[in-house]
Each structure stands twice: as C-alpha cells, then as structure tokens.
Image (cartoon, rainbow, N blue to C red; front, side):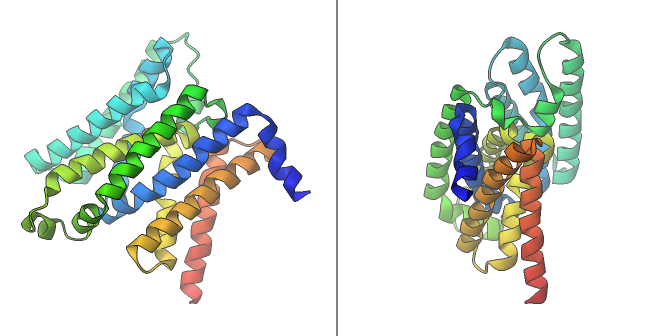
Length: 271
C-alpha cells in the first residue's frame, strides 16, 4: 500500500518534472540559506523574491519562461542593493525595504497594464510547480550544478566571511566581491524556488530548514547537511500531500518545513 502511494503520482510526467525540481530546490535553498543566515541576510531573501515580479510579468507577457525574466531582474536588484548599502552607508533594512516595495508595486501595476494575458497572479505569488515545463526543469538542473560547483569551491572563504567579515578582509580575502557573489547566487536560487513555492513563500524554503537544523546541529557543516535533508523532505512530502489532498503545493511545502522547525524547537527545549 505504501509503495502504491509513492508510485501512483509518478505515472504522470508533470509530477516527475515537479518532483525533480522540488528536490533540487530542497537542496539548493538550505545550502545557500546557511550562508544567508550566517551573513544575516534573511530579509534580503524575502525582498529579492518580491522584487523579481516585474521581470516575471514581462517574461509571461512575451511568452517566455518566467525564469528568463526573473534571473536578470533579481541579479540587478541584488547588486543594486549591495551597491547602495556600501556607497551611501544606508542600512541594509532601509535600502532593501525601499527597493523591494517599489519593484513589487511596479510588478503589480505591470500586471494591470498588460491585462488580457494568461498571467495568473496566484501562480506567481504561491508557485505552481505542477506546471513546470521540460525547459524549466533542464534550466533548474543546469543552474543547480553551477551553483553547487561555485559553493563547493568557495566554501571556506564564504564561511570565513560569514563568521568574521572584517577578519577575512584583513586576511586578504576579497570580502566585498564575495559578498556581491553571494547576492548573485541568492538571486538565482530564489528564482529557482519561485516556480515551486512562489514569491510569498520562498523564505520558507530558504531559511526555515536551516533554522531548524541550527537548533539541533552543533557545527556549520552539520547545519548545512541537516538543512538540506529537511529541505528535501519538506519539498517532496509537501508535493505528495498536495497531490493527494488537492491543495496548493507551495503552501503545503512551507507548512511541512515549519512543522519540522517546530519539532526541532521542541526537541531543543526539552533537551
């Protein structure tokens, strides 16, 4: 009976594509999320998710994959925020709040201006992983491979900068450039996640699994490995629950992720 429950959805090709993308997002979000939390950029992740709306709308309007429109939009916003923070000496929260509210509003206005297209606001905000195309799947696979290679190669410098930015700079590391690179990688991972959980819930996959793992793991590598495990479980289990209960996939995945966090939190309290 248990095997049948697992295999039944896999008779549909769109479920297989969705499952592959969910697993990849479940891996990449916590992996990068560990560095994001380490650099205290959690709000940046949520802001970038909202800021890519104009790029997604334009891509939808001209018939392209939303990923193609969102990636340059997200990278431009991330680098722009980083530049403002460093050059104007404005606080992260202030510059992020101004930028993402303006761009999210621009995206909503653009949706109204291009009325008549098949753009579904709910799909953008909450994700629609079941509509993942073959092109989207291959793009996600390619981006995941590139991101994994970069993070593995730059693992030690990234960890150093996360724990001691000034010390890493004194030690001769290009801390500012690596910070910009982290923003670019964060942008790409967020865009990858939008198809799965949407703009509103992307932070649930980026931050929550890592936050849960940090409650029970003691060392940074353990936080990453356990966070990835929680991310994959949240994505896959959420997809199956949504399939059998006829609920939207993105919110269910976010709730599963939050449930794992609650379990880890309780375990931490009673320890």
